[in-house]
Structures are given as structure tokens and as C-alpha cells.
Length: 361
Image (tube, rainbow, N blue to C red; front, side, top):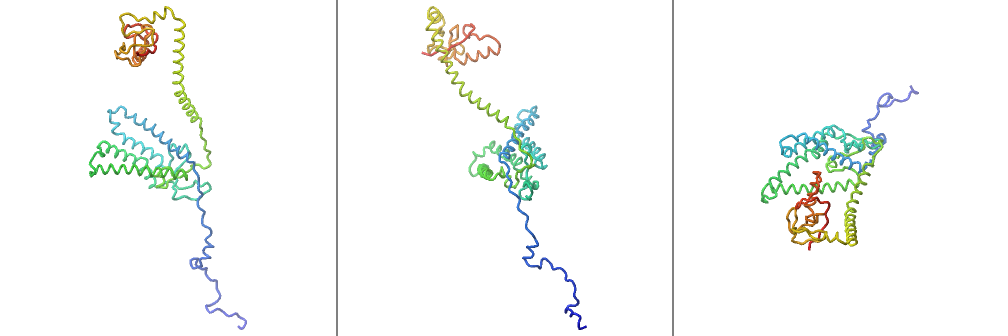
């Protein structure tokens, strides 16, 4: 007994139960909790891809709307125009249901490899493009901005225009509603401008409703190569530049060419002389409005086609030498060409082989 160890007051020696982590000191708790998960990486999505996706959606929707309205082309005239807002709402609702509401990208987003992500519930990942799909509230906000809001605003603007709310008295409800609409348009424009500046700075949320709903466009497949062909764009730019160059150069070339022709014709007349010029310069008897072989006509001369006096931009028909205004001659020549007939003078019926400019004296 003398060699036996003395027992503790609480009884024989036993294994103590583990302590509750909640009762441990804060230092030990933080050490056992570990490091918090890192924040998701800040991803960069090309701004041009987001803008191009929106433009493509607008163009494709307009083409689809045009084909959709052709279905009602046989309906009573004016019915389609009156029901245009409702038809556009139905088409926008169908497109929205099969794309954003069904968690699918729009055609423009599909071409640009983009999708919507809920920016409020972003989780960390390798590429930074991971994230939850849009919630029901976010999709309803998208529908209100893309389809329902446009329909309501179109109907309200049409009612204000037809009812002439702006011309009402200042104390009436309609005039106040019109003033409120003007303020709403101004506020929407200011919000769009502020959102555009923010979008150009950080590349997030291309429209105000996306910023309010926290719906961001990210890449659907981060590893997919962005292959964009600029061949069509290059052809369009080249054709546009050539068209502008032609519109600028052709009038100058045409003016100089007409001057060269007049100069060459005058040189031939001065060099030829003789009986031919004398015969051409002698007016025919009995025609007071005929001037042959000269570049001037009296101001009292009348057009043989429309009888207008003085003649507007006078020309002389060859070889009959009757005076006609340019617009009458051009119209009759175009009609004769469409009828595959020969252009004839309205006064004498002779076939006209040409005309030359005349000057009023």
C-alpha cells in the first residue's frame, strides 16, 4: 500500500473527453479553421464581342420581324400597322422564351461565344468564367427591359402622340404625364451614357438593365478560339470607299468632258466654216421658237413640249433646231427608250439625233 500511487480526488485515472471547439480560445479556432477561399479572378471579356453580339441580335431580329409581318400581308390594309406593337411584342416574347428564359444564348451571343452569368453568385474556378445561371428575377428583369418595357413605352408614346398630350393645359393630367415621359426619356439617356462610360472603363454590363440585375456576359467556352473573318467587312469598306470616290470624281470628270467636247466642237466649226455653218445658222421659216446652229435663244422662246416661257435650262434639238427644256427632253427620251421607239420632236415630229445646250439672250 505504501508503494501504490495516490489517486486523484475525483476518482481513478481516466481518459478525458475532447473539449468543445466553441469553448477553445480564438487563437486555436482560427488556426484550425484554415485559410478562407480566395476571391474569384477578375476576368476580361472583349468589349467588341459584347457590342457585336447586341448588334447581331438587333439585325437578326429585324430580319425575322420583317418575315413575320409578311404573314399578315393579306390582311385588311391598316390592320397590321394598328397591331404592330402587339405583333412585335409576341415575336420578342417568343425569341426571349427560347433564348434567355430557357438559359440559352441569343444568336448574337452564340456567334460571339458568350452567355449570361449571375454576378452575385460567382464562384472561384480555374478560368474565372464559372458562375450560376440567371435567376427567375433576373430573367423577368431582362424580359421587362427587352420586350415588355418596349411594348409599354411604344403604346404610351403612341397614345400621347395621337391624343396630343403636349397641347393640353399645363394643369391637366395628360400634360403632366407628357412632361413625366420627357423626364423619363432624359433620365434614361443619362443613365445609358453613364453606363456606356462605365462599360468602356471596366468592360462589364453593356446595358443599364444588366448592371441593375447584375447579369454579366462571359465566355461560354473559355478555351474556344475567337475566329472572326473580316473578309466581308473588308469588301464592304472597299466598296464604300470606291463608291464615295466615284461620287466625288465623276461630276468633275463629266464637267471637264463637256467642256472638252464644246471646245472640240467649236474648233471644228471655226475650222470648217462655209456653207454648212451658214445653212445651219439660218432659222427655218414659220418657226419663231426654232434656233438652228447657234448657242443662244431669245428669252421669249417657249418649250415646244410644255409651252413654258422662258425655257428652263434650254436645249436645241438636232437637226430640227426646235427649243425644248432639258427636263421635257429627258423625260421624252426616257419614255422613247422604254418603248423602244425613236425620240421625236414634239413640234414637227422629226426624229431627234441629239441636242445641245443653248443660252438665253
